[in-house]
Amino acid sequence: MNKKEIAEIKKNFSDDCNFFTINRVVTAFVDAEKNIKCKTNQLYNIMPQDESELILANLKKTLSGKIGSNLLEYPFPKNAILEGGQQQFLWGVLKSKLADEEIVDNFLNTIVEKVEYVSTYSIFTAHCTYSVLKKTKMDEIDEDSDSSDYNFIITAICPVNLRIDGLIYNEEQNAIAKKESTDRIIELPTDGFLFPLFNDRAPDVNGVLYYCKNAKKPNTSMIEEFLGCEFTMTGQNEKEVFHSILGKVVGDELDYNMITKVNDKIQNYIDQTSHETEIATIDSQKMNSILWEAGVSQEKLAELDRVFEQATDKKPLTAVNLVENKTVVSVPSITVNIGKGGADKVKTQIIGGRNCLVIALDDPEISINGLEMRFVDKKPANAPAQPAPAEEIPPAPVSETLDDDSAAPF
Image (cartoon, rainbow, N blue to C red; front, side, top):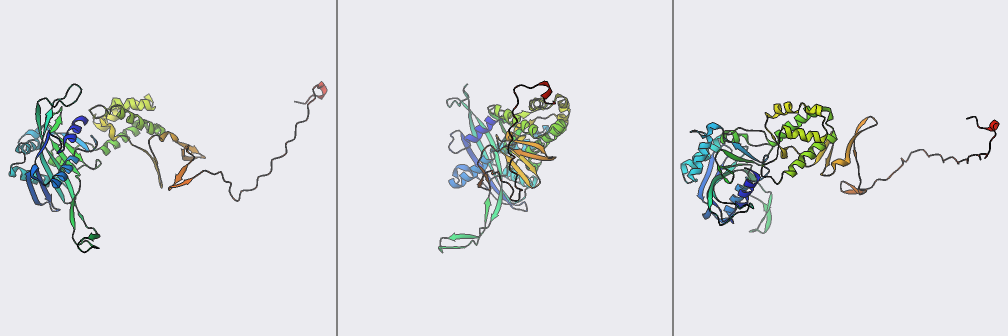
């Protein structure tokens, strides 16, 4: 799914949209011993509004985040369509529209069995229908056109945390008192998925869209064990691979200027492709162009194709996972954060044999710990007094005419 397709589903994932319907909702609570303590399965339109709005918000959250980072599309392996494969399993859940209790119970039990989770959690699953209207040549929805239905299931896995508040205001006693009871609060989802995909504005059963709140730590058990897909690199893994490639190719040219230039070049590439529907990726050829523009020598770039292929197995890297929003310079006990537009005010320099970070401070108003300070040229209190400058002695007048015998010896 590209950016436009995800944005279209997310935009219309609302009770206010006339083309979108949540049909049935299944909820379940799973304790720390992996027991399903309670389960509900009901029509969405008969649920209390305050409850249904919260469930809708949790489900919609699984469509949030950056594509390639928080939202990852996984294709099913070829054997997943066979009997017992996860593609076939999810297709059966979709076709049941969550109305078959045996299929729903099997679905929930499979999640509990295969997904590893660090705490108690809740499962929210909904069967939804989105009426897909055709678009005009101007890429606008034609509300007078015939529609086709995109039926899908969407699932959110939400942690449940025990909340113990120390003091509360007790209205009955009109007093501040210790809270006697505890609450199990359902938090926003950490994992989720959507099946089938919405590709070319039509259902695509050959893959699934996985959501993870923490892009650095996706739940691989959900991806591999429950969804039956092959886990690929996380955004953090891609960044580490990218750093490794730079280190091996650029080598001793990888100084402050080179690092910030490469980051800026990739960011410019992301900005230039932001209007495109497909997410920006960087293959060996694109990286060669970026490094060349950043000043890497052609001699070093001769090794790039081989290093890139070994590090990525010829798979492109997601551009958004490779850039930093700010430049961070770190040494033991000191960290300097440099925001956008500030990288060119910083340089590295060897002064008196020591490696130094030099920052050009153009603004005379500087604050430290919130206190404004100014640079004052102060002499040390115990500095020796400087001798008064010697009185200038005017040069002797030079005769306008000199004989050869009286000429200066130089």
